[in-house]
Length: 118
Image 1 (cartoon, one colour):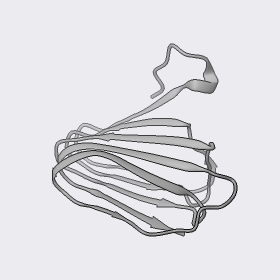
Image 2 (tube, rainbow, N blue to C red):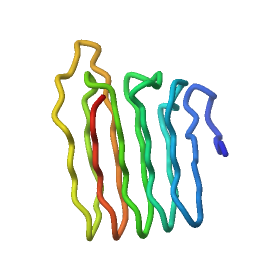
Image 3 (cartoon, rainbow, N blue to C red):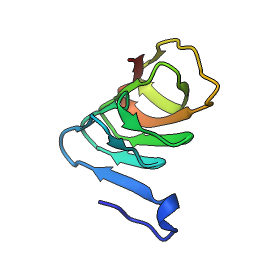
Image 4 (cartoon, one colour):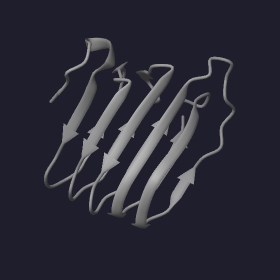
């Protein structure tokens, strides 16, 4: 579902699942701004083959469920937000001159953020 009042180049892609998680993988264009709303369930996002914008933002909102994110090796990852009962793990990488950044915002009670590279 896409909800927007902005030009198509600035759309926010909304992914909603009331019970259960969400998965995204494979090639294709990743929107520059994505909001994942899963009250009960995690998000498993593999961006390693995706075409991503210079700055890509993923916001995850849930009560129970974290974020597993796989990014290309040359992308800088910034993690923000909070989880009362969950941690953060970001696998180190070597940013490229391209300067691509993925910002992960996680807001939840149970579930953390796990970022791997590949």
